[in-house]
Structure formats: C-alpha cells, structure tokens
Amino acid sequence: MNQYVVGIDVGGTTVKCGIFTISGVLMDKWEVPTRKEENGCYILPDVAESLKMHMAEKTIELGDIEGIGIGVPGPVDPNGHVNVCVNLGWHDHWPAKEMQELMGGKIRCAAGNDANVAALGEMWQGGGKGHDNMLMVTLGTGVGGGLILNGHIVAGVHGAGAEIGHIKVRDGEPEQCNCGGHGCLEQVASATGIVREAKRTLVSTDEASKMREFGEALTAKDICDCAKEGDKLAVQSLGTSLRFLAQVLAHVSMVVDPELFVIGGGVSKAGQYLVDVLKSYYEEFTPLLDEKADITLATLGNDAGIYGSARLVLGNE
Amino acid sequence: MNQYVVGIDVGGTTVKCGIFTISGVLMDKWEVPTRKEENGCYILPDVAESLKMHMAEKTIELGDIEGIGIGVPGPVDPNGHVNVCVNLGWHDHWPAKEMQELMGGKIRCAAGNDANVAALGEMWQGGGKGHDNMLMVTLGTGVGGGLILNGHIVAGVHGAGAEIGHIKVRDGEPEQCNCGGHGCLEQVASATGIVREAKRTLVSTDEASKMREFGEALTAKDICDCAKEGDKLAVQSLGTSLRFLAQVLAHVSMVVDPELFVIGGGVSKAGQYLVDVLKSYYEEFTPLLDEKADITLATLGNDAGIYGSARLVLGNE
Image (cartoon, each protein chain N blue to C red):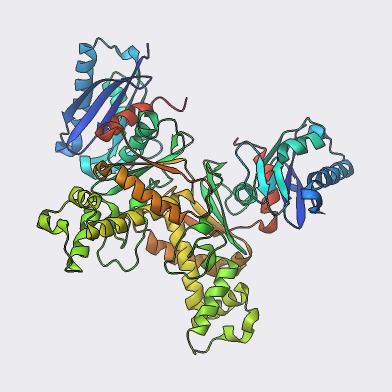
C-alpha cells in the first residue's frame, strides 16, 4: 500500500510520465503525445488512460499509489487553478482535480508550474539532493527558475517566483524581451541569448574566431565548445553572458541566501567549464558573504519534471 | 495566564523594551542604556533587571508572559547563536538562552536579527498588517531588509537573507562599499547614498538648485524636501537613487514575488512622494507582472523592533 508515486510532466509536444517508488526510484517511464485540439481537453484523459495501462502491466493498483503530481508549462495558482496555459490551449482548468476524477476520485493529486516542479525533482533525486534551500536555473530557449526554501516551492503571490529570466541586467539593450522589457537576463544568458551575444561580438570586430566557421547556424553549444578550446572571442562573449547570470545568482543570494544553485537545461551540457566560469564571477559579486552558496550541475536532464511532479504529492516529510 | 509578550530591541546605544498584550497592544515601553563594557556582558542582565521592575510595577507575573523576543543588531544563526556582534562587543553568545536563565529558566525566549525582526513587527501591527508575504526596506545610514514569506522570516542559510543593500546596481562606481563591493544599492539609496548622489549632481553642473544653500551639511531630508518643491536637480538626483531602489524591488519580485514592499527608516519620512516615485519606476521594471506588488510606508517607526521581537515568540498562528 502506498508504495508508489506518479509524476506527470505536461509539455507542449509530449507528456512525460513516470512511476516511482516513494523513496525515489524510477520504475517505469513513458511518453504520451500532447493532443492540443479543442483547447487541450484530451490531454489529461489520454494520460489517465495510459497510466491505467502501465499500472495494469505492472500489477500496481490504485491503492498502491500515494498520489499523482502534475507539472504544467505555465502559472498554477496556489489553490491549483490554471487560468490560462498558452502552450496547451488550456483556459480555466483544475488539473489536479480533473486527474483525480479521471482516476476514480480516490487518489491525492497536486499540480505545480513545470519550472518549479523541476527544481523540486533536482532537490529530491538530482543535483540538489540533500539541500532544502536551492535555486534551480534552467538555461534553454529561455532562462527559467525554480526556488525551494525549507523544502517548499516558492511560487510567489502572483506566480512570478523565481522568474529570474526577467530580471533586468543590462541598460541600453535595444531589443525587446518577450515580457516587454529590455535587457532581461534571458536576452543574454539563454541559449538564444548566448548566440545573440556571440553574433554581436563577431560583428563588432574583424578578429579571427573559430565561431565564424558556423555562420548563421552558430549554436550555444558551438560557442561553449569554442570557449573551452580557448577561442578568444568565444571566451569573451560567453563570459559576458555568464557574468550577467552570476550577477543574478548574487542578487538571489542577497534576497533568499540559498545553499546551492543547480544549473540545468541544454546549455548546462557545457558542464564543469560553465560552473567554473560562473563561480569565479559569483565570487566577484558577493564580497559580503564569507561563506558562498555552491554552484553545481543538474543531473536529471529531461526527467527532472517527472521526478519533481512525483515529489509534489509526497509533501515535506 | 500568557496574556502578555515581551519585545527587546538591542541597539548599540540603548535597548528598547516593550510589554505587549498577545493581540499586539503596547502596554509599557522603556529604554535601558546599552553597556558595552567587558564585551557587552552586562547588556542582558541590565535588561532582565529592568524587565522585572516593570513587571512588578504592573503586577505582571512570569506566568502571565508567553515569551520574550530579542532583536540583535547582527547575524543570528537559525539555532539562536550569535557568533560575533560588533555593535555590542558580543562574541559567542546565546541571547535567548541567556535571557531565559536570567528570568529564572521557565520562559520561552527567541532571538533574531534586528532588520528581520523589524519586518515581522511591521507585518504584525504596522504597514504590512494583513500581509504574510512582504519585504521591509529600511532606508537609514544603510539599506536594510527583512523578508517575510508565509509569515516567517527568511534569514537565509548564511544569514544574508534580505541583504538587499548589497545588491550591485551600478557598474563603474569608483567608491568602495563597506562590504568590499562597488556599486551596491546602499551606496546610492541609503540616506548617506542619497546625499552622495546629490552632491555629485551639484558638482557636475553650474545649474541653480536650492540644495546648494545647505552646503556641506546637506541631508537626505533636505534633498527630499527640495525634490517635493520641484527643484530640478533634486528631482533628478533623488530620482536616480529611487530608480535603483525600484530596480532592486523588481529583482525581489522576480525571486520571491511578495504582495507588498514596506518602506521604513529615516528616509521614509519623505512620505507619499517617495512611494509615488518608487511605484512609477517599479512599474517600468516589472512588465512581466500583470498584477504588481504594492508599495507602502512603515508605520511603527523606531518601535518596529520591539513589536517584531515580541511577535517572534508568538509563532505563526
């Protein structure tokens, strides 16, 4: 009884699903296509049906499951309500309540924002294991964040908790961010931002750089690779991006003072080089702190969301 | 029984003491000089003695008191330990434990950092009443902060929670901050910082300004008064200081997303003008937020510390 817990990570293309033991061992993992037709009304029924099949295969009964957690790619109110989720076509949904009904009404369900839930996953079984006070930073197309204090997600009163991608870091930025601002962290330190910064650097000088060989197709990975090989312009432009990120990590330290920053998302595949550069800049921005927060890499990759969704229903014990 | 609660705000010159009803009505208030001789070993015994006298006067017995809270002008570990408190000469103190022993061992005592405790006081009976998620900003000689989430102080893992005065806001600042950094918020938005900024403005131009009449003795209050009267250079330089402060409030919104910012300290005597200027800049820095946090003035003045210390022992009920 209550040996298992289920994590559902709803994405715009696929829904990732996982069955875990309550101690955090992943037993089964699968994906379901995200059917966005008719305002996404099929998404949760599809998930419930596939979950029932996987449970049957493993002879797991509903009574064996502690609960089902759901990560949603948009804001979730503290009471579980989703007003709008653009990526899924959802308007006015109660995903936890709906999943509970789909499973027969007798199981505990909870929902949370996907970035926050991923942070919870990394805290439970990933790079943040053993740390109750941490910020997870996801460096992908955008810059996402998930803040955990005393083991609890800090979602914020208006759902803007850990929205560090939209902290303004740069004056005079001419391009507009998606949020409507100018000079947001996301504009310089996301995968897209790292590429933008490098292209600006390349245009500003005639100096030789391996980055020029990639032309318009230059990616954040190429830039990280070139920087690791010591390419001067790559080191310089990636350094600019990471310096702004480190400055924001320092800001976070002066607001909530966590033990640890966990860096995930595609860009984090650059590995220890990224961590080392971030640490040196973070040091520069935190002269106040005798003891500094540590910076480390996420370890769960794309599974962070299912881990964290599952963890969501286990509470804080 | 347990009708009262005591708040002790230990400062470098005087210790403020208050006896409150548990519903937050201040019944008695007095001060005791802070004797810093011999590493401040007399401070708490002096307070305990005066507290016993005031209790006797009011025929309050120890059994009538729910607890005694103590605000300390320096970092307090989560377990209540004070490693060093420069302003009091303390090294290796356990103020709550010591106070409990001084009062006969049978009373609940707690200690916290004074800036955090002041925030708790404003939450309980001041500008933040009715709000569980707020940041208090104290604009005095420095810029202090106290962060409350879900009714609890966020002190931080290394005691740097809400140290927003040391968020770097300005590149290229030549002067060094007390923390060793350059360009901290405190350097431009504290009372001292507002004066520094205004003096720099006055030196940079020959333009007429009422601020010039004050000469070297120019204070933050003078600058606020001149700005309210529409003095162009005062509006401009105070605007620079408050714009940086608003930018940091926006940062805080993108980290913990509180309901409310409460502005206290000497500079806050400038009143609604200050709030209005801050709000307009805060608006500019938070395009992401559909609903914005409110900004308001602290109302307890120098009593915030005794209110908050008292509140500290009442827990989160």
